[in-house]
Length: 195
Image 1 (cartoon, rainbow, N blue to C red):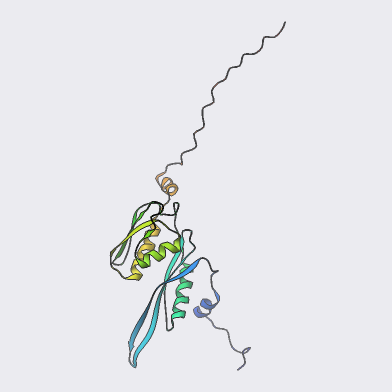
Image 2 (tube, helix red, strand yellow):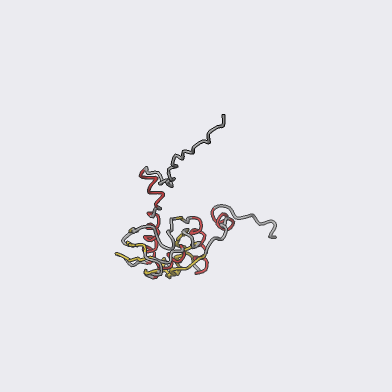
C-alpha cells in the first residue's frame, strides 16, 4: 500500500498532531515519575510528566502528561499547558497581595516581598514563580508535599490575585482623577480710553 493511498488519521489523535499552538515562553519539566499498571499478563510501565510553561510576564500554564516514553509524556503535558495558560497581575517583580491557594490536601501561602529578596519557596513552586516572571516573593507549603498538588495549589493562588484597579472597579470606586489646580481669577485693569 503506497503512502498516497493511505487514509489520514481521524478523530482526537489527528487533532493532537496537527493543532500545535505557537510556541510562547519557556517550558520547564518539574517532575517525571515512573508509573506501573498491573494487568493480567504482568506489569505495564509508563511515565507521568509535570510541566510548566511561562512567558516571564505573568502568563503561566501547568499540565500533566502520561505516556509510555518520557519525551511523549513531556510533549503531551506541554501542549496541554500552552492551551490552558492563565494571566495574573504583577506589581514590579512581585505579586500584588498576600493569598493562599488550595488544591486537594496541598495549600500554598504566598506574600509579596521587598525588591532583592529573591524567590523563597520550595522546588516545584519556585519553578512556577520563575516561569511566571516573579523575582521577589515569600511562599510556604502547608499540608501535602505532593509536587503535582503543590504546583496546582500555586496556580489556584495565582487565579485569586487581583490588581488595585480591578478591586476598585469591583467595589464601584472610580480611579482618583488627577487634581487640577484651581485657576485663580486674575483681574487685569483695563487702560483708560482717551476721550
